[in-house]
Structure formats: C-alpha cells, structure tokens
Image 1 (cartoon, rainbow, N blue to C red):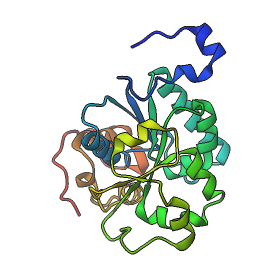
Image 2 (image 1 turned 180 degrees about the horizontal axis):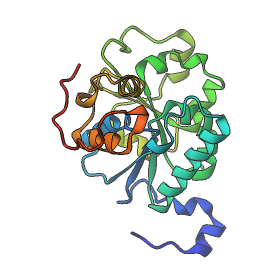
Image 3 (image 1 turned 90 degrees about the vertical axis):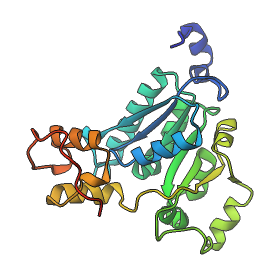
Image 4 (image 1 turned 45 degrees about the horizontal axis):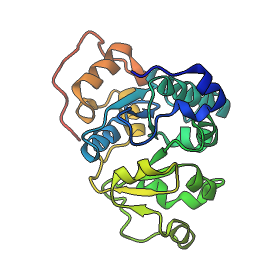
Length: 242
C-alpha cells in the first residue's frame, strides 16, 4: 500500500485518488450481497485488476432509510475505499447512487472514475428519475441485462438522444475518464434481484442457491435480512436454484 504525503493531499485533494493507469484496486460497494454478481462480471471483464468489495449488510436495506442516512453511509464507505487507495469506484446500489451520487462525486474529486451499476429495467426508466440528465455527467453507467429485461427493444426517445455517442464496448474505457460513458454487460446476471433475495430470506423461503455458500453462511450466522433459521447450520449444501 502506498503512503501518501499529507501536504500534497492538502494542496490537491484529488491526489488521494491514484490515476486510472496505476495498479491500485477498484472499489465496489452495495448495501448488501446483490453486488457480488457485479463483482464477478468485473472480474471477468478486467481479470488483471485487484478488487475491494464492501457489502453494507449491517445497515441494509437502504430503500426505507431517510436520505441523510443513506448519504452518510455512502460517504462513510467512500472514505473507507479512499483509504485503500482505490483508483475507481463502482456503486452497485441504485438507492445510494440516486441519493448520494453528487456527494460521492464531490468526495472523490472531479477526476476519479465513478460508475453506477443499474439493471436494464432501471436504465430504461431513467428519464423518470429526478435530475436524470445530471447523472450522466456525474458517473459512468454499467447496464446489466437480466433475463426478460433486455435493451434490444429500443430506448425511449429522450433517453436514446441523451446517451448517443456514450456507449463503450470495453470496461477498460471507463477508467480513462471520470464520467459520461455507458457499458452494457453482455453476460446476463442472475434473474433474482437483491430485493427478491431479502424477501425470500425474511419469508423463510428457499434462498441459499441464489448466493455463494460463504455468503449464505454469513447471512445465517449474522441473521441478516430477517433470517430466522438456525445460525449454527454453517456450510450446509445450498438449496436448489429456483
């Protein structure tokens, strides 16, 4: 881990963010475990990169929290990632991005790449978001296609005009500028969302087959998302995928 010069940081806050071409890691964070599928795709696209993933499971879900609370959690995680000398950040949480993207951009500085992961369904409805055009200037977009929610049907007219010329084919292109580019994940993510996973856990339905065994064990051990099963049952075979 490189050591930073406090005097340099004071005169240039953005010096805390290594340049995109360095060997520094890429940070990824989500309010829970849903972003693990994103982490897997980043690993597939950028196999030579070191990655740091933060799952804020102890404070999830964000959806029913006050905006100031979500903004505070996002900034706290960003400070942690900055302390790890990350060169770029991927926000794999729609709620955190919609509420805190401007604060995250201010905290990171104008030059650090920030990418927001969204499902294709959310991206298709982007024009219904408040200040949606500003989001295109504050961060990159990574659009993940889930089965049954693809982009081939065409974009709404306003969105299509706004994203013209922004699409890139290679994830590495997101590292060469701070914001404004859009990458489509050609590898479809699993059909079940993080919201669906949490609901299944809380309802006592089958869910272990939807996450890696180590993640399932962590959820059970710490009784996350309303889990009411036996926390002592660690390492049990996953239930069949649904």
